[in-house]
Length: 472
Image 1 (tube, rainbow, N blue to C red):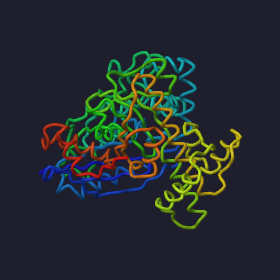
Image 2 (cartoon, one colour):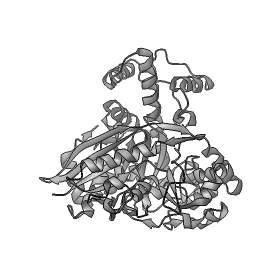
Image 3 (cartoon, rainbow, N blue to C red):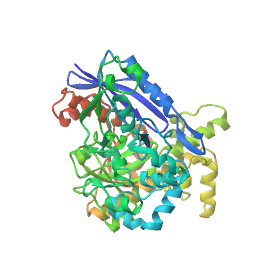
Image 4 (tube, one colour):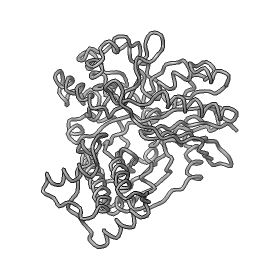
């Protein structure tokens, strides 16, 4: 029996989860959980990359006797630049850094948003890799010039673990540089913005063993024999692999964590003007599966408000207490009018105070402020669901289909309140779980590469048997 280690990296915490097949089920064991914060350094918001790498290496070392392989999945759009000597040009910058706006401003001088979307199919957001790169060229031109290769975050860690450079397709599909129709980098964009194609990695599919830690660049791992598998590097692609979307085109997926990603599987990428106008994005799932969805601020605002309110209270606030309060509120008054627009950038801002920006938005719209601090939780939950309803309508308009099923994964799927609200407001059947979907997707791809399962479908059957899944 071979065991795989998933390093599943989120924007606020990373986890190490062991996975293996036993008695026809996927067994999971959490061996590491580590909270991390964005830090300000040299005028930029950056990831504490050295600390993250140290924790990953330590986890591999501590479990090296048990594991046959390791795979890395992370959030999208962020990257590192490697110089001629194989070292990082600078610590990776976080997508929440406000200077990325400068890259967006430069980009739209040369090409319109519509032209950029028509080349890539990626939702236009200033955090995207393309705009980050243009901002970096402006802020640190020397750094860009000395860079030999750009590696997306999971591929960067994989390179340090193995010494080999690859560019996995699902994480590259978040960059706004990849043309999803051709499966290659957009020559039009590279030319328009003076970007060097040689700095971009060779594109590869998930599912191959790309190296071994004994041949990597991390000294303390050179005595160990652990293969590194290129999994679906984008955590969304890893997570969506666990949904019914991969086998049922009439089901929608909702990956609900810090971000909400709500969408469908399509026959081919949709680079149309209508998809652009609806603010939709195209990305790749496992085995180049086209996914059409919308990126939205998810539980980030809820968690941020909860943390701030706990400081006011001087104690921790349980989600059971929040759920009970919101459910009572709904019983007393079925609908509320003071909703916020979860797409407003201030609700995803690192610097903003959650309560202040909600109040600011409501005042601007002439809407009443919540009477009690606990009422803000309902405002956030209901606003999330209202936005999901709008996205569902947009996807149905484009596809000409009516969707009656949604498969929810991620932390939000644990919330019976959120699941019930979505089921009721969107008039759909909800399948909620598995909750550790991104780690499970990561592990299944590894187990297939190791020969522990013959097909992904076999792995999915084992995963569904072993994980809690609820219906609403």
